[in-house]
Amino acid sequence: MVRWRSGTVTAVRRRWAGATELDVDLPDGGRMRALAYPALVGDPEPGDRVLLNVGALLMGLGTGGYALVVALPDRLPADPPQAADTRAAGHLVKARYTPLQPILLGVDEDASPHHARLATAESVDGMPVVTADLHSALPAILAGVHADAPGARVAYLLTDGGALPAWFSRTLAGLAGHLVGTVSVGQAFGGDLEASTLHAGLLAARHVLRADVAIVAQGPGNLGTGTRWGFSGVAVGEAVNAVATLGGRAVGSLRISAADPRPRHRGVSHHSLTAYGRVALAAAELVVPDGLEPALAAEVAAALAPLAERHRIVAVPTDGLDAALRASPVGLSTMGRGLDADHAYFLAAAAAGRHAARLLG
Image 1 (cartoon, rainbow, N blue to C red):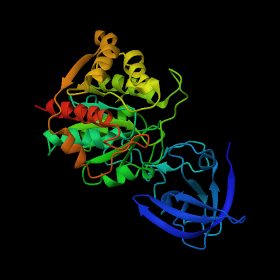
Image 2 (image 1 turned 90 degrees about the horizontal axis):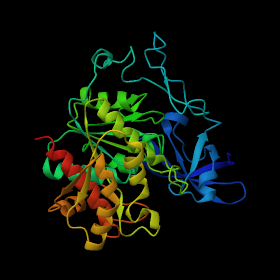
Image 3 (image 1 turned 90 degrees about the vertical axis):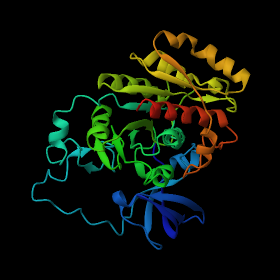
Image 4 (image 1 turned 135 degrees about the vertical axis):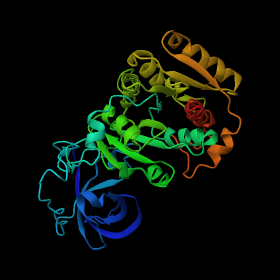
């Protein structure tokens, strides 16, 4: 449940798109690093009293390395401007029935300028869609796309398995100008466009953002219990089904690693094997990078053999991809490991991006 604290802002550490990082002093003399989303709670300043949710920080949970600002109780932000038509500002509620639920304009709502276009849209017209279960794959996939198709318009679909606010991701903030836009789908919010479902988001990526390629991945903070079914990345399989339903081409970015200390994630992660092997009912093109170390390559091939009955296993050359990854506009990191520490992981993601680019013809 929620662990509450009250404190006082002593410093604004840094800002990025949609987020502000703070130092907060507590009444007991302690200090916490905190994160505020100004669109939800207002813009904190030194001297402001803040109410904090500190549960993830105290438990040391992965990307939960912040206390989260719930309110500035002594300086509440003003209400947003009231439109003459109360529904013109949108009525899409996300993070529903939580205290900080935002009300947003859905890309396909009646009040949206894109409503007419999306009301009749039924297909993404063969658009390649790369699916991945970790947010850390996003910049590597993008590097692979742009290595072969530097002018390709790439959209990101932020699903709701990890962080719900797009603003949490410094990676996403750093990719500004390299993506044509972000569509936040399901309970996720804060993208350039808001969609209630992944299907609507894929249609928006194609017909509103005019994307050539889309990338589907959850926000930072994968949830996992260590069991076959208990991880948020299982949604990758459902993404493959959605892509097929809408006439797209699903390209599976596999989670491959020789560096992860957990046996279930070495070779091909059990997350990928479950999502693509058990959940995806439609076919995808699962990408394996050429040039893996021989023992790892053999392990990957053996793991993927049962999946070949449904999916197409595609070997993709990797010449030039290392350079593309090193030129990424944002740092690469997965589970605390950088490019050189977990090279196979990032290479696999970049190879999936390269394959998507080559499907453009």
